[in-house]
Image (cartoon, rainbow, N blue to C red):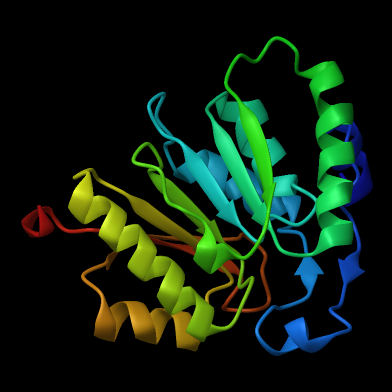
Length: 204
């Protein structure tokens, strides 16, 4: 099933690409949604629990947020730094909720820079599809670790299409360890996969 047909099932519009055309392009990458075939594989192989709360950094038009919210019915928050894209995700939210009124878990979106977002103690899963430079990624991960040090809990980082800059930083400069690798069937690119990073028990 095509991307647009999958969108239609959720009553949203998330296809397409958007490039940054100003100084933000130096640190923020273009908008491109995670493929539905990859999300289907994540759904099959990753177990979100009823107590999880997902935070999607660089949520774009909201495909990942709506998909997870719809299939797992857990709270999801998206952060987006592009004003036009943020307006589009709010439009999608309005459309999506017309079909998802039965889901009581909240779904929220915020406009702003990822490194300035205050991590709530209820956030447990953090999603990244290479939304920004490793410089910003470092700050975001530091914010996550500070939150966990203050309010101890198990958290996961979910990276789609992981870059060496991200994985090297996590390996060399953080206590996160790879807990799982989820490959996308039929993928021709070895990067077309999810890496799940988790804090080891000794961290606690």
